[in-house]
Image 1 (cartoon, rainbow, N blue to C red):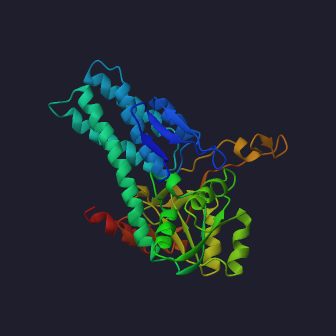
Image 2: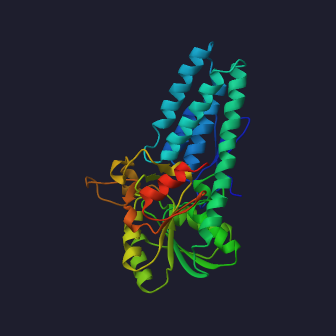
Image 3: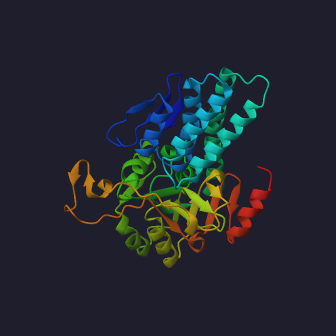
Amino acid sequence: MIPTLEWTSQGVRFLDQTKLPLEETYVLATSYQQVAEVIVTMVVRGAPAIGVSAAMGIALGIQQSQAATLEELEADFEQIAKTLASTRPTAVNLFWAIDRMRARFRTLLAQPERTHQAITEALVREAQTMYEEDIAACKAMGAYGAALLPAEGGVLTHCNAGALATCGYGTALGVIRAAVEQGKKIHVFADETRPFLQGARLTAWELLHDRIPTTVICDNMAASLMRQGKIQAVVVGADRIAANGDVANKIGTYNVAILAKEHGIPFYVAAPWSTIDLDTASGALIPIEQRPAVEVTHHAGKQLTPDGVGIENPAFDVTPAKYVTAIITERGVLRPPYIESLAEIEAQPA
């Protein structure tokens, strides 16, 4: 399994995704501030991985707190949570993880054996439990989603929603992995995903690692391949799914969804339940992160655009629910109308 992140006795260890595919190097974050920096700089990325990273960052921060009283420890917790919450605004998994750790922390404060050490140990266990749950959720999604893919043919994916975006196995790539494990003859077409090239650098690296046939295409090639009949399905991940089924995912996903609809190709979204945000009514209310202009103007240190030109660099876009054929979660496959199917599954025991 690809070691995206892991808790160690020294700190949180991350595979540096900014160096892939040419270098497989690791970063050790020894403070919660360093965990926050790792998230901001996209050393670690992908909504599920960001969530678990934040949980581990909280556990690390509490472990290192110099608080003399439980009241001071509570104040430290909120400062740690605030720092981590400010890293990336779109992925709801980040806030879900922080809220879960906060709820656990408050439960611990109410217990008789509420020593700093006992609280730290419990928070470390909670973060590690979230890590294990994420892998299990990805494998469950894979099992549900594999049935939706063709017995053979091309599957297009955008950005990276694989083991690198999670704690292991992946969401969209987990569906593809499961289909291949079942014997389906899948050929993956990976959009390069400008400007950060998650598809060209990360998805291609992962799938080659698993020996799954993969072709990288430029983002503007998808329509042509669809018209030629080379793509039979699209499967992507998500950073937030609104209550009506609108999906926020890496910029360019909306383009792909429109193209798939036009060509009669199913468009699937694979995401854990922690990505579902029933408190957000529609995609219009999802905050969209704006990334630094240098990601567009430069690549590998080389300037690509003239000085003085205006730059737009939204990290995500929103795909309206009407373009989504199905949403694959660890709880099952959801179909339209999503405002009903999401609410129905939410009401069921987890």
